[in-house]
Length: 118
Image (cartoon, one colour):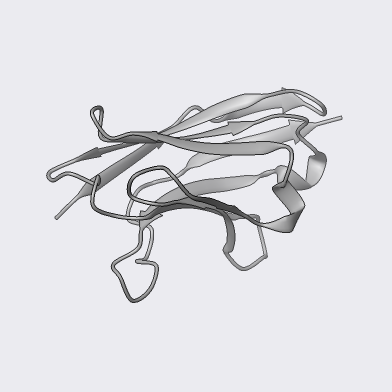
């Protein structure tokens, strides 16, 4: 089973940037479409972005289009999320998860906290 560790979160002011990483171990994630999700306090987990197994196709939630960029390095078994022009509403715990071919699997890591302040 693949283990996922998210990192790179922190406290940033509005308009700032962060780069999140999702490092996998246990097995390769190169065969999986990978996604980033987030969950803010009191809210449901929501989809943020996804990337195909090869990295050739990317998908974004409307609220991050033009601001966030998902990428992957299969040689490093890692997926990234570059977040620019951060807004207060981007504050959440961010998780990564693989798609098993039928659906997104439940996030299995601790996530990484992103806090945007004014």
